[in-house]
Length: 144
Image (cartoon, rainbow, N blue to C red; front, side, top):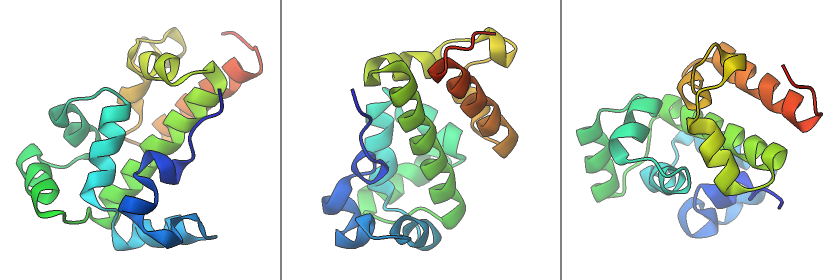
C-alpha cells in the first residue's frame, strides 16, 4: 500500500488550502504555521490521544485544546515538529506496507533504538535521523 501524501495526512485541501500541493508550499505553510487541525488529524491517524500528541510536539495540552477550538495555527516550530512526525509516519508506511503496521511500529520498543519507541525519538533531529535509518534498513532488508 502506498503511503498517503503528507498534505493528505495533514488535512489536504480542506484544511491546508489549494496551494498545499504546489512546489515549496509545505515549507511556506510550516513557516506561517499549520492549522492546529492538521495536528489533530495526524494524531487520529497515529491513534494518539491529545495528551500524547501535545507532549510529542511540545505544546501544553490546554493550549492545543484552545487552538483547536479557535481554529488557530501552530507556531513555526510546532509546525516543523508536526511535519517531521508526518514525514516519518509516511516513511514507516512505505517501509512496512500499511498504516496499521506503521502505527504499531512507531509505538513499539525497538532494539535498534536501544529499547526505545521510535515515536519517542522524534523530538530531536538526531533522533529522527536514527529512526529514518532504521526504517531504511527495514526497507532494504538489512536487519540489526
